[in-house]
Length: 625
Image 1 (cartoon, helix red, strand yellow):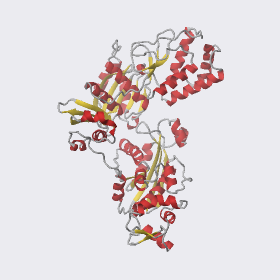
Image 2 (image 1 turned 120 degrees about the vertical axis):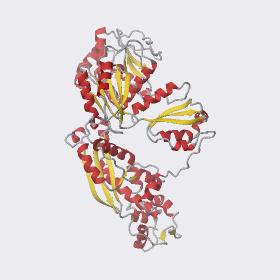
Image 3 (image 1 turned 30 degrees about the horizontal axis):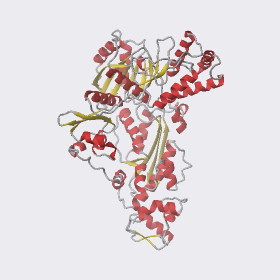
Image 4 (image 1 turned 180 degrees about the vertical axis):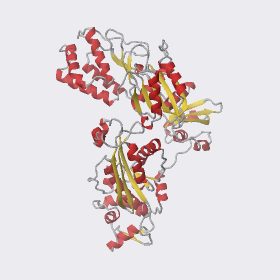
């Protein structure tokens, strides 16, 4: 029996209904009897310290309790707003924490932060935090020390806590050199265990389920969501007391238990289960080897141990073919990789090095938009793979539907000649054109249209130039296309699709980059040299002692040592070029990128590289020099 139940019943002086208990324990005045029963019945019915009368009302049979639940524990309920989903390329825009002790709010912290990068329009729409709001705010390096001092000595609480804690821990380590490791309570996990009837556990629906009115708190703003989460954790801790959790460690352990039965080892598998327990929990690549040390399967994962265990302990019957294949596995080889780019490249190389194995699949997406430059009337169409054939390639696209939509939008704006539907567009083969259009466009006007199209795709044509472009297009359509009003709307939709699909910057084959990404640990770096879109060189080094002489020599050879070799690149080189292009579009940068302009000299490149290596705030950025 817990003291809060006992006091609630004693105050009433009689057996208490579900709704009365919810009102007393959870401060939920608006819950109906049925709703309160859905929350409290699973907790009370299995507890020997409570009993019901013939009307279903509750009474306490053992009043021996402490006066308060964990009165010596202080919680900091945290919420942050960011520019996107993962550090370092996405940054914090707002920090908030509500300090709770003995069921009461005792302090608050709140600050807007200048993220040092543009806030995406989709995030602005969600949070209401604009670039103008954070322009004059301090950077994270100034705010974070104060925030960490506020959290010091408390339990870290957040809704979906891994997200908030990952951002704060990353920047605390990289910007301040501080390692933080507080106890962490996740209200999402805890609510799943304590309130299985809720079904949905986002803040809004969880608040409604427990009868909490959070309308006064700003949604999707850090302080408003932190206040709501603080009210939720107070109620969840009261429920935790009801079911007999005595200590903070009890609650921490309770939230991590799924309540589901663990899957069994796949039938016929011979690997020692102890081997799987010793695998690293870091992101990286892995190989499953048979007794002849031949690769049976390879892959990449954000958590190697979990991914490999899921293979040998399948959660459903959909992996029967894979199970047959892995029965011969005797050994697992792993290589941690802190960088998404490095992990994907290594997974691709493992797959190529093992003939006939079932690997991790194509990493470059579902296709590219190609503009067949070099002909009198270039065309825009989709292809499956990159090729070095003089064309301009944009992508890759994650979904075929995105590519189809973009092509449709292009042809609704530009009267380009088209290719046959379903025409073969493999590497080295140009699709057959459709019969000549009834619209007769001179090569000069057609060339100007292609130039404008490329500039729009690459983010180089400002909206202020749209009127001039519309005049050109109206002339090209010769009144045989959309009306001027419709043409303007079509152009707006095309721009929207390009922005939404992150198509900006040069086409793939015109990229000249130096990419610095973490290696097997954050203390290591891998330098990738990309010339004309192709990965032509790479090497590893320790971040603490960058090898300036080797950087200089390799940069000189790759970018200032004359023209690149002519001829068709190998299939492997094109595959890795597609991987890099896909990675650039997905914004998964853990290091930084230096994009080389034609005017740069070797000294300027090296100066920028060394300055960026020494600056932790360069991480996650693309630097144009």
